[in-house]
Image (cartoon, rainbow, N blue to C red):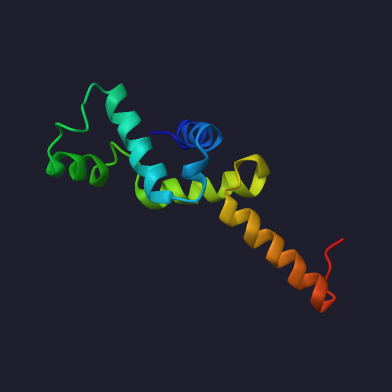
Length: 104
């Protein structure tokens, strides 16, 4: 799968479901489910050995690739931030202000 196609799918999932923004496992499993469904597979009937084979052979994107792309999207698009990321960003800005390191 091309990186641009994967990026598009991850961005769509992040925008459409807030739960995926803070939960990489849910994001990845739903992305894999959608991709397998498009290929005609039923996740409920697919043997785990086949699923793992799809990942190891590159027919499905690796978990690390999905999370990396998700973080990249969230850095560029604040609309895709999850609640935890918003809270961390707020704490970071407050700490910078308290320490006199306000960003301009």
